[in-house]
Structures are given as structure tokens and as C-alpha cells.
Image (cartoon, rainbow, N blue to C red; front, side, top):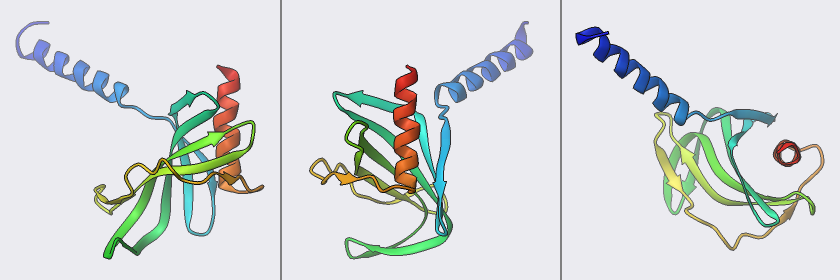
Length: 139
């Protein structure tokens, strides 16, 4: 291929490569009356006994809440969850609220001192733990 067709093929190839490099595999881990919850299994990382993963909540309707004295409207949340698979505990160490146009309308920033909580049975937290920790056993 030469000329314009070769250039287009190159651009198409680069676009596909870029899309693949940024691809994430979101797996549904539960739902309730307010939202559907997903984890990005490509984001799983291990640090000693702790496992972290990106988790997303997609709400069934637009929500408005007050964060740091400012009202924010959002449709999704994306957070970093830490898990201890053996002890069956978890904690949220960061959360971003995502507006209707995909912009971050509020962010907690890193929350390293969060308390660990027991994972409740029959919850999307339990499904998260099972999916994430189950993936580790396959590696």
C-alpha cells in the first residue's frame, strides 16, 4: 500500500492498537434498586495480602448529592476497592463521582486510612470479593 490508502491503513491500525491498549474488561458483580455494579478485572493488582480493583456503579437515574458543601449531579461512580481475600474484608480507598457527560464532578482523592469492613453475605461486595479473589486463584 502506498500513498493515501497506506496512510489510512496506518492510522486505522494505530487507532485499533490504542483502543486495545486502553481496553478494560468490566464484569458485572451485582445490582440493586439503585444501580448495577461492575469491576474492571484488568485493574486487579496485588500488594501482599491486599488486592485492589476498580469498581463502577452505574445508577438507574441521575443522583444529586452534597459534597464538601457543593451540590453535584452524577450518574456513575468509579472507585478503588481494596480486599483481603482470606479475611473477607474490604474498604474503599478512592471514589470519583462521574457526571452525565463523563466528567468527574467530585473526587475523594486517596483515602489511605479508611477502616476495613466485613463483607456482608449476599451483597455486591461479596460478589466483588468472589470475582476478584477467584481470578487470583486462576493466575
